[in-house]
Length: 303
Image (cartoon, rainbow, N blue to C red; front, side, top):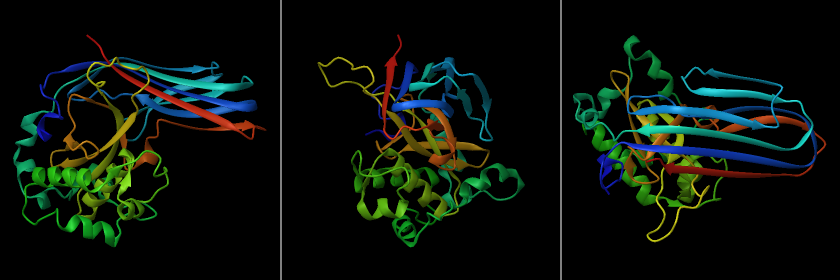
């Protein structure tokens, strides 16, 4: 797989229509629902958001949109109408460019990875991304796993590519094998998980070496098998990681797919960890004892 072209055979800009729908069904009336959603992609160098909206049914009594401390777009809502079903749908039209090869060829990307440790006032915004979480995730197992990858003096881009390949090779993707609360040490021990877990393993490894790394949420465009039609809603939300370069630039990489992030990835939000940018979270007031959630994601090429 070609790590420097996002895994595609031809690197060209792509346009996608993204639909992310979440539906909750309850066995009793909900009198009030509060929610916060990260469903609107970011405008970035290499990514242009042409349209974006979040719809909520039932219609909220109060709602607002804003930008959080990391520059992500978030939506708040409060539904006061009694309901047994809540549906939140994010829709976007996004254009994404291939990875900028010039970024990979910069002296900072090609220089020793130790030189990319954020230090001093010039990199103050990156410092918090090198800090461990609470409870801590940088365990002896993380240091041991990272030790054979972060060779002193190795170019940063080479280390990132090796980390991406190593996680892809060493871990098995198994849906349902972990939960949101699963620790990095557990994933390392079991050697299985999903995209969120692999991104968090990569981030812990980078931070164990004093590098700044962030968790990125978004979508990955997938193609159906040869001869098969696309199935609406068959895609899923996705997660990957990014490492900081001096000059406040970032190299994003996807260890789940052994690739650098390119024209097939749609970036929605980023933070220090998943907890900073979940697609949807909220609180309800109800006597309901049972609920069902259905999530469908569709990333369709737009001619």
